[in-house]
Length: 329
Image (cartoon, rainbow, N blue to C red; front, side, top):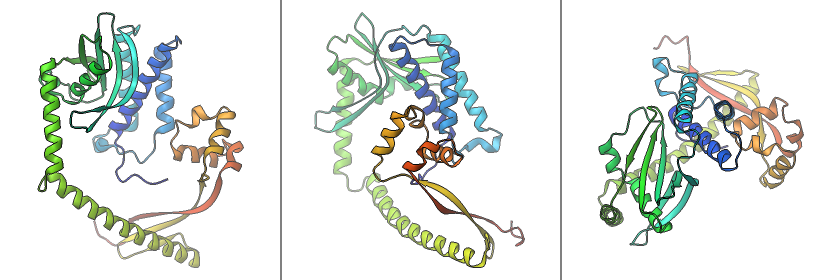
């Protein structure tokens, strides 16, 4: 598994878990399944447990905040929303996590992604966005928002009976909604501004984005070379540690632990493995688990029936830390 260059923050992770839980809630409602606060929170907790990993960044850890604090926050957001919105019949749900592309007048594409799309019997459409932000969106900010406003154009194009399109931000941390609406004139002006901005960016030579892309490309090139060098050094450290039968190699100010571990290697063609998991009723649960969680369960002997579908190999984990005997702070 390729390690992400930037760790997911706990705020982003919590927001994603809340989004998925609300999506499941409305799906259950759509199929006339029983919905209750207890089942919503159970789904959220299970989803959290299966996807949480130690590399998720808790920025405010130095303020005493832990994973548990954020999980409880997510639970409160869901409970407050449940109480306010039950029995969830505010309008007819047309789509959840709707994704599409909208063609602009200049031929460019605008990505449409709507958390919850609905309509009532009076031709009012609702574009809803869940927000777990710690700051409330005020009316001025809502009225100036471009993203959801552009979605209004897509809605009016797709649904000709739309008399109005309400833009709704469910501000879950405050148990309130921010609501805005645009006139046809405002939407036409906004779309023209977007087209002009795209044209400006495409034609720019000195635009900051050009310099950023050039610098990004150079950095990626350097990273590739450094990663190659890192792999070479890791291999040499492993050989050195095995040669002398040690698990810690000391440098001038730092030390590296060299620990032999087991890891699971998935087959290149994963179709057979996925079909096996589906046929044996394990796919629904496993598909929500990140690879590290999947690997952990195999190595703990919790998925013995899957072992012959993957390869378990020896690997090494190298950890760099400060020497305690150098006197440096």
